[in-house]
Image (cartoon, rainbow, N blue to C red; front, side, top):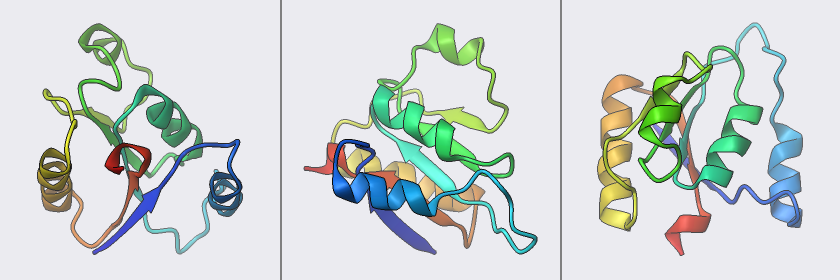
Length: 113
């Protein structure tokens, strides 16, 4: 398992560098990546970066229950609780690992500060 912390902020150089490495085109050897978004901005960025085979997870603060129910993204999963602290984020990562063993997990880093 690989966990990569990413600040989804296109205005920052690090955000641009990371975004430049993400592609919506799948390579034949592409192993799906998993995104964990904590904020609504992070969720929007993750959904833009994700390919068809990638999965995106988020906390209840990132998308409302109504918007999640009407979602257009088949690979979006929503935790029923907010990911407001490091302990909850660690628990969320553990749950994601159970569902996607061996996959790279990208975690929105802005909320970890």
